[in-house]
Length: 232
Ligand code: APR
Image 1 (tube, rainbow, N blue to C red):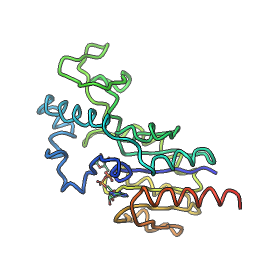
Image 2: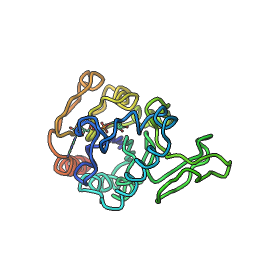
Image 3: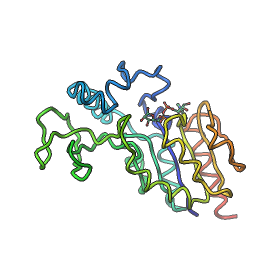
Image 4: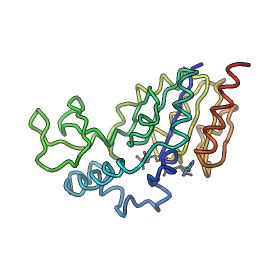
């Protein structure tokens, strides 16, 4: 069975990574447009580099939680694709194999001039760190005001899935939030969230099941249910 899983910051919350809208819209005490927008980058590259350096370093202190691990377990029974808005590497470290990062990855950097020159990077990034094309390196993150290049790769997965599992996202940031609108009429949709706020794309789906509660409780329970279905 083909399953797509759309995750947001809420799946990493219990690993200790702050979500976006729970912290009153401030990201580590910064206005989001200062540190996560193309305008912010043009205004103050050092501030942006420092912000992502701090978030990249934080990855060394956090580990995947039971929700990440349960999704990796599901990989053993079904064709699972993780489509995440998160830039952390917890799905990879939790053992999932097929992962699409819609908003980029903290552990990657790229040339400011092209998406084609991308490098693994697990240390601080400074002004003067250059790509092989001679241009400054920048975080490989999709900032507000930029296109979401991986969207075209993600859509067919959702269109062809029998089940869509949505975990820990407020579903407020488009185009990612609109992905659930691509689910087949007959797909089963599960929306797991501490405080579920289904958007209109979601509420129009007849086979929607809301799983209210922490991801580390709800996701393992759901994975066990799906595993049992497989044998019925
Ligand atoms: N278990 C399950 N859900 C949780 C938990 C938890 N322990 N903790 C928080 N949540 C839920 C919240 O209720 C909320 O619905 O996770 C969601 C987090 O929402 P946001 O902070 O808006 O994060 P997200 O939806 O991933 O944001 C999407 O917006 O800011 C941009 O690029 C950024 O990728 C991000 C995008």
